[in-house]
Amino acid sequence: MVLKTFGWSFAVTALGLAFAAWQWGWEAFGIVLILSILEISLSFDNAVVNAGILKKMNAFWQKIFLTIGILIAVFGMRLVFPVVIVAISAKVGPIEAVQLALDQPEQYKNLVTDAHAAIAAFGGMFLLMIFLDFIFEEREHKWLAWLERPLAKLGKVDMLSVCIALIVLLISAVTFATEAHTSGGHVDKSATVLLSGVAGLITYLVVGGLSGYFENKLEEEEEREHEEEEKAKREGKQVSAVGLAGKAAFFLFLYLEVLDASFSFDGVIGAFAITNHIFWMALGLGIGAMYVRSLTVYLVRQGTLDDYVYLEHGAHYAIGALAVILLITIQHEISELITGFIGVFLIAASFLSSVRRNKRIEAAEGGAGGPGEKAGVSSGV
Image (cartoon, rainbow, N blue to C red; front, side, top):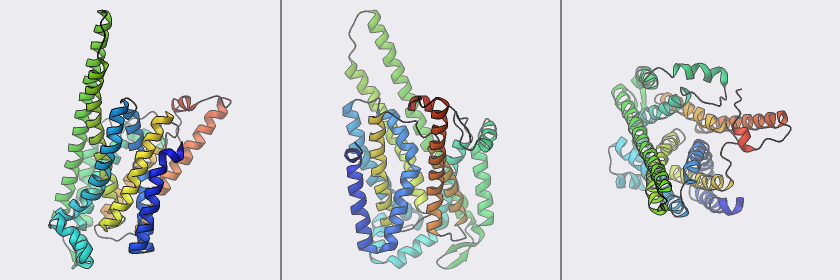
């Protein structure tokens, strides 16, 4: 089962890492590996959400999402999007950005360095909003209960996440951007940081709004489908399940694509905290995206989505850490290895906490509790 589900991911990993080491050396090998782990870590909750929705689809729409969807995810969001970010930030064309990366790496590096303040502000704000919206939401399971309980109560205040994010942006612009590092030295980039940070905030709100729109459309379609089925049963008629399922599945597919794009932003933006090399970035994130696809399929086939309830928390704390790091790197350099391993550490810690929670529940129930029962019990740390 594991080899069948993850076989393509294993093959892509081996080929990708071997190519990175052969083409660019062991530094590239390490960075690509870290980016792959980072993408898997940040996208675990994406796989869980995708699996929960994907299992409602019929086989045809599942295949559409896992084929066309993965092409969009890997080549669109992980390959094209980083190039677009660099092109917009450095004010060059996408083709020129790629050519510079290939033919004039030093000039490309200088362009990226000059654009780093804008990239860091945009990405830091987007990631910070993801973290804040997660931490201020009331949840059944709490990993760090001493912290999450009071924050969930504060989250009842309207627009609190946006207000805090804007305050953080203002502080960052005053503290870091006044002497932002560029290839030409240290210059004042306060206006650039403010503009880019607001753009990151707007992007998050737009993506969230689109996701909410598709989710509402999906709920309306499912409600209408249920009403028509009930009406047909009362009248003794047969319901055409194919047509109704097709419409619902279409909205599901659209919703999943928007969701997948929104989840992709954190990995792509967070990758700029690890490296500015667009090809290392695309390769590492592409490998990670393959595992997210395989993990989605695995979760659907196994039917166990809630065994490790704190992993989603660990992923979002990693997102929050990356947001802070990106904002700090507007002025100060931080080791790429330190940045990458912070996310890995948080994910590992949340996984171990989930395992210990499951063992406590099994011990309390005499080992009789199944995965479904585990997920239904809340246990804070």
